[in-house]
Length: 444
Image 1 (tube, rainbow, N blue to C red):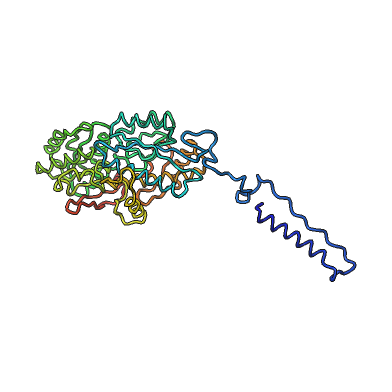
Image 2: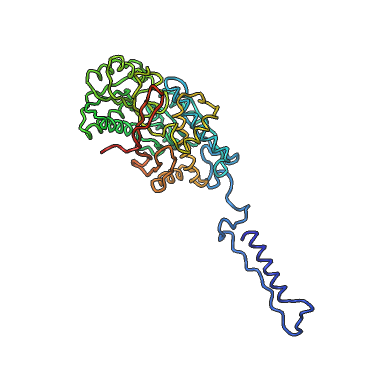
């Protein structure tokens, strides 16, 4: 029983006694006094609703429902460590700066609000330079030395799968990697459509434009494999002919052989799965050869909404370039994006000078979804509870206005948590992107 209810009961009992006894002036001389009312016994604390429990007995403190010690959770100091690996320098630095900034912005915002259930968060992040070996080294360090609870927003889709053995061995969740294929790994949750799905949507857009011959240029890794899978799956849906599938070595600027092969194929449209530098070179070489196909890339390759690729190409070559959209454009007209934009304007941490604020919005959005999920854990930060709660999102999705609803389910397949992508087109004259296709799932 609460203190207020106890006081009210006591006052009520006193009032009854006073009414029964009366006073000397009103004594009727013969009536026997009524028995004094007694307070009903208080219920046992285990039977009380939580709101009526004595304050000192309520569950409080960071990780109050987490049994025993938990990796990355400092109950005494109320801190949880989260990790992220980004290409902060190197070939993808423009994207990496924006990516890490978004992760930092979201964490800072949560901490400034007081954290979650008594816990604040600490970010450990490392620069992998878009190199597979360095990313693996980073992830191992953050697990073994920094003792992080899990990872948020790690980028570099071609390299991410190389970290899975270490992530699975440690059990550390990986939320919102940008954007590997779905390998049905228990620890990995995809909050963006895969590059395969984005590539299929590029093919759908080509079909809408009237293309009948399509080609693909991809890196000689899983990134390229996803592009080839996309074109092989989606071209037949529209009766298109696949006329070329060309590979470019990861990290190489030698794109000319692939470009010449695609030109010789006479393709109407080209799907690319490359890094920003390679995409810029492909666009320039197409333009210099007088070859003018429609070109579309997944959001990571295109840097849709920013200057990652188009800023490296000649303006005439970049004009009309298409990029898939996993996230709303950074100038989208909704309150959530405007809130992020105000934060980005004021942000002065790592990556503040990035020319790719679109990537900041992407990782900010998926991080907001992560903290919403963390809030739903109700103080139990065991990996078992995390997976159980995440896999129930299919019934109660997390809604972040800048991305598709996050609706994870159980394996197999359920950790691809969002579906559908949009398409945006670049205008070189205004140096702006405009969304030209809504967030749709691939045609079947």
